[in-house]
Amino acid sequence: MAGHGLGSPGTSVRVSKALEMLTEVAALRADRGRAEYRAQMAAGPHTTAPPPPAQERARGAGERAHMRFRTITRNARALPDFLLIGGQRCGSTSLYTTLCGHPQVLAGAHKEPHFFDNNHLRGEDFYRRLFPLRAYLRARRAITGEATTHYLSHPAVPGRVAAMLPDVRLIAILRDPVERAYSHYQLARRNGREPLSFEQALAAEPERLAGEEARLLSDPAYRSEAYGVQSYRTRGLYLEQLERWWARFPPEQLLVLRSEDMFERPGDAYAQAVAFLGLRPDTARTAFAARNQVVYSSMLPETRAELAAFYAEPNSRLEQRLGRSMGWQGA
Image (cartoon, rainbow, N blue to C red):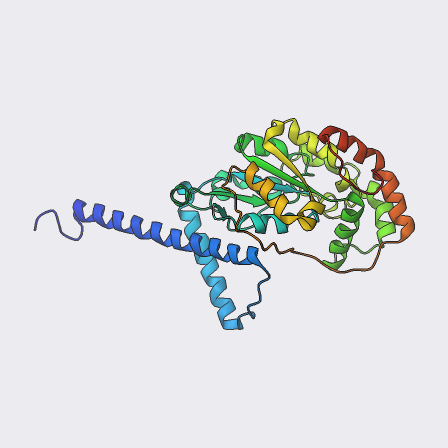
């Protein structure tokens, strides 16, 4: 029949539409599976035994194929509706995992993609591939987001976010800076990125960070190992970091939570974040699992006292700016 041969225009159009439909279905299933897994993780500790090596290799191949597919469909994908910007070692993983258990939240391909600090030069298309399809989000009446803890402290990130995502909702979760500094140091030690004792590292920090902030602002391609890993004391100066965000976004777009509330009263912190994001209340949620909790040796009392004294004035100014007590030592 004329017009219906293998190479005819009519057949080409039908084949193209069929492939497009199959592609959409595959994407929806992949994203749905990822969302269901995140929800399972949010409900409690994952206890399934690790797969054998062959399965692990197959899963890796599947992940790579899935990311290739995401790259192909990047123009049909959303940009994030919310960013959990940090701080580091403040419970952001626990909060993000909890939020991804909400029926109206779909996780991105990576929790912490480091786009606006380390990968922004790759462009918007690179970023879009990490998030669900817009059609799937509309069908689910859902939102999506990511959580990169370096965003709060990186001096150039607020401007980059404002340029691409002017309406994004921002969440910062803050922990007692004394406890945060020591937890940050312990992470660096576990990862083999800190050879010094905690006290030596605190003493070396000014020299290590000298000029780093200025270079991060002046050179878009620069990545600072010292600023990212060895900024134990500096990362706890929350007010000056938040001021950079408030300079780019109205206060109503930035929610500031206490880490201590997340772990002591997780239901209340979760409800506050859910309301801020404009989601339906999730009153059925009762299980909240903490992530990345590690046991390590205690801080020396004299070091704790010195840090508490150092943070007393910055914490007081933060409380005045927020209009509430943070309840931290030395505040």
